[in-house]
Image (cartoon, rainbow, N blue to C red):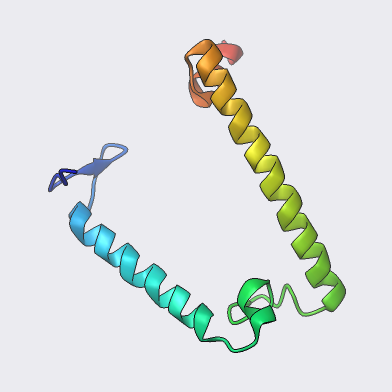
Length: 105
């Protein structure tokens, strides 16, 4: 894989090289995962209401169960939508954005 210096994203130049951005991402995600794994309570490691909940969304046990169920439902819906995007792209040769653009015109 060749990393091009001075790359752009959506026509805008990136303030860092791609190599630097990859290292920033590795360090930030690594720190977050380290903090999550440092939690001793296994329940807090896996579900909302653990170390990072600044809005207090998971303060009530009933609300935690509703959030868990909503996360499962939304992820299943997202997987089905992604499957449909793939089938549509294979059948029409267009991605979802170009298909919507041609559908609306």
